[in-house]
Image (cartoon, rainbow, N blue to C red; front, side, top):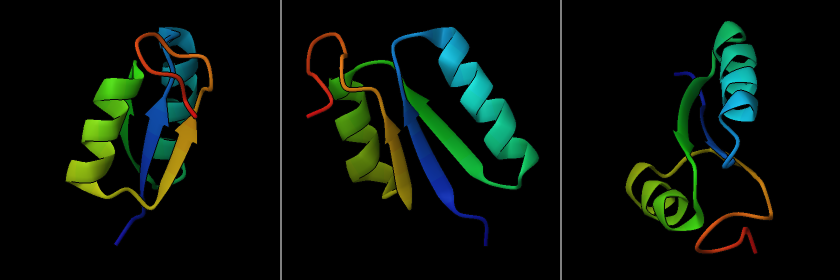
Length: 62
């Protein structure tokens, strides 16, 4: 089973870059663009790894 990675960033270009690279290397990827959505996705999907921007709208990455 491929590991699931949650990518969290409010810049779409960074999310796309990370998603493209990770999917090419056989990881499953989900993404969020703010802290609230990321927290919900982490609770719901239980990713193996979270790649997190610290400066996010609404709720920061800390």
